[in-house]
Length: 163
Image 1 (cartoon, helix red, strand yellow):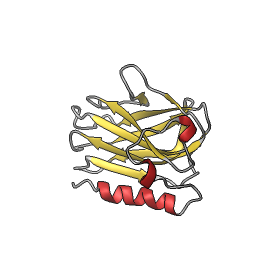
Image 2 (spheres, one colour; image 1 turned 60 degrees about the vertical axis):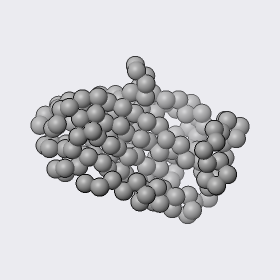
Image 3 (cartoon, helix red, strand yellow; image 1 turned 30 degrees about the vertical axis):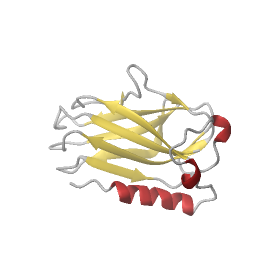
C-alpha cells in the first residue's frame, strides 16, 4: 500500500484555506515559534510511539518520550487530523489509536488499521470539532483485538493540531 503524504498535506492545507484561521506556512516554515509568536491556524504535530504492538490490548497509553504519555497544551485549539505509520502491515484483527483529553476519550478522534495489508492510515476532522483548552492534557491510547497481527509492529501516531 502506498502512503500518500502529499495528499494528506493538501487535505490539511484545505482545512486552513477554508477556515477563519491564518496560514503562516510561507513565513514560519522551518522556524521555531515561541509561545508569543503563535498565531491562530498554525499546524503542529504531536508524535506518539509504541514498540511491538500487542494483541488483546485495551486503551494502553502510547509514549511521547520514555515514560511520558501526556502533553500539556499551551493554548486552546483543535485536533484536525491523525496519521499513523506501522513498521509492518496488518495481517489479522485490528488495532485502533484514540486521542484522550484529560484522561477522557475524545469521541471520533481515532485512526484504525483494519484492512489486510494496511500499514499507513489517516483520519481528518473538521477544524473546531475536536477542541481543547490551554492546560488540557492530550494522550493517545491503543486498542487491539485478540487476533491482531503482526505482534512485532512498531507504530508512530501523529496528532495534528491547529492552535
